[in-house]
Image 1 (cartoon, one colour):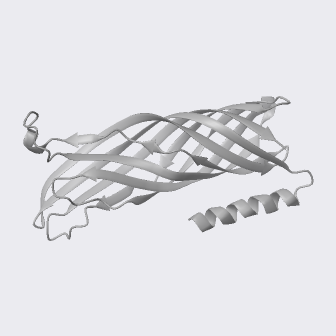
Image 2 (cartoon, rainbow, N blue to C red):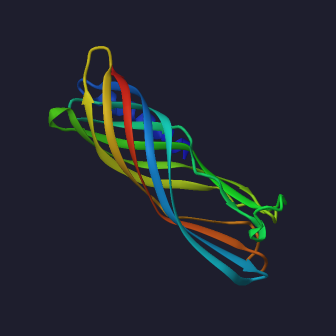
Image 3 (cartoon, rainbow, N blue to C red):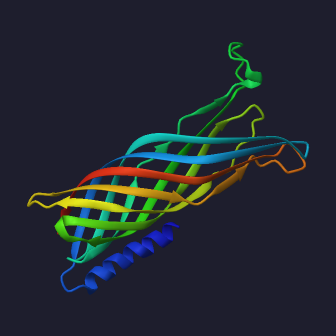
Length: 219
């Protein structure tokens, strides 16, 4: 994926050189988002499905992002990189024992890391713009389990779309934008064969919404 991103970035500059009067923009943003999804965990005991747990969860987080664009008065194409987003830590207390002090609980949290967005931006009247893009990143699973098994990390893929407003000034421009997110379903397991104590987790219907305020400079 990194090679693909570098190729797209090189293509952006090739696209800019092909324009009659290309502009280049760099920016720094502060984001606040809310994300949600549905999860299903299937637990097997020596090959037999033992329990199935379905849950819905949502959380909020703030993060910074940086972006670069090349375009003209009609629109631009860009690439952004965002800081890590971390879910709350979920604790499953062993045998529902809340006061024994035994350190054999299962604890899981997820980090969304190295998240890039390749996007197109179309300028609209009144300094408004429409924006849509493709998202790719890494889902890093942090777990402490009683069995000592771990869940494999996975890729994050999805799409974003939304609108924004840019206030233009001589020193720097200010943008305010709202984006909606939709991500592909993700499935992972604990690395144990289906004939053993195999655990499988599937997260579906992952969505989100972010608000961003950013400062940028166009050259």
